[in-house]
Length: 605
Image: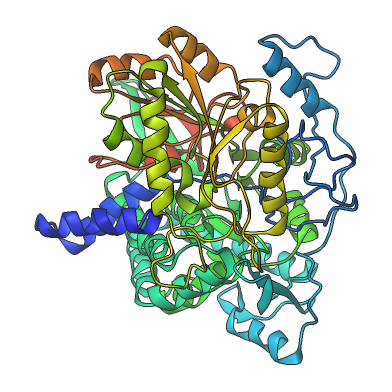
């Protein structure tokens, strides 16, 4: 199984064979999951004005609040208006980079929708399914004040359930509950908060199969991957034991004075999450925020709200105090209202660059703190000394897992000319083993893309690449029938300046490019406004690490990408350049949800 879940399951099995404790094994699994922070917009979607592909860099590739169907017949791109600091200023860099950044400035106006549209009539029976997925507000399980909205199965393009549609009143009550719960929660010790979250994780784990089944239906990923995502909950929380507490630090003390620095929680955190790893990212955000002493309001994507809403029951059963964790669901109006709410102190958002800028614009009005994990266009550099067959399997996984819908997936592959042809052939063999299908079917390795908009973006990028001379080595055609399926696709014959190379495709299409000089490969890899992840592949680990240090990214791997058999304290994760602000995970991710307070004590009056 080439899915993320299979990788995590494999890691857990390895730990089990080595005799590691159950909780520790799951902690390692959670550490694997830390690296797989995925970038999908979780707020606003946009309507294209043209069919040009030159705007994919900043356009929304997935929606956490709502989407709009294209009004242009046959249009294949959803395009985002960008508020850019570069407007009316000269942009420096290579021509492809200049063109990409300039295009981010020239974006048409945005159009909003409330929730994902559906041509399917919603029966009374389907509407009642929303009662199976209640919101969590002030410790109570509640319906949506505005009724319900439909949730589709991307494998068949059919509505299979409905989710509660929160009203402004629901939102206000959730924020008020979080505000009321904050003083008592922030006074609890780190150990007390951790114990409650571990109890919460235990209850989530007991419902792994039911949550995973719903996750597969609403997101599309194979069931093994869905189980792995849910299983990461306990590992994610257990790993936090070694990261806290955030004790005060004494900077100086003598008989006359003392200077100390404290980490103080912000207050109420709004966690806006995407559709590609809805459970994993929600758990990651709420865990760090709660352990730092904040209270939280979670808003999942309307494409995948159900699996996140299923966490509500576990929160109630675990004894989390009312108001500490609140989960609401709805469309773009709800997300906008949440970000703008005057009682929200910190916004933690995973999504696109364009939407991240909009979040910053909103936050700036009240100088709210933000954590932004945004888009990536990760480059992998393959040196000529590489073991082609071993590397190919890992590279294929790192580019095609979750059907390419991972922010840190390999999206550009630079291969030395001496091993270019063998690497292409090895990757084609990997692609031939992939089984595309409904994630609930046994043996499926790659499910559908999550929504029609994303499928059209991927298809449009590929068509644009073909017009620019690309050769498709395998895949390249969506199968007939229902669902948003697209096979693993390998492309050669293109270079920088083509949208498929310059922009984040967020799908199973990988451009493979040749290089002769390593310095040239490094320069081309860095010639991007993105800076999330990257990797170097070589039999010389020291040389690989030296090259990795030259890549302008928040995280860089050597002989791995996304996942690997890495041990130790979970590291921080986040992007350089336009790939984000702040850090998630690790000690830095915990501190991200606090502000520093200095106390200076004069011991004598």
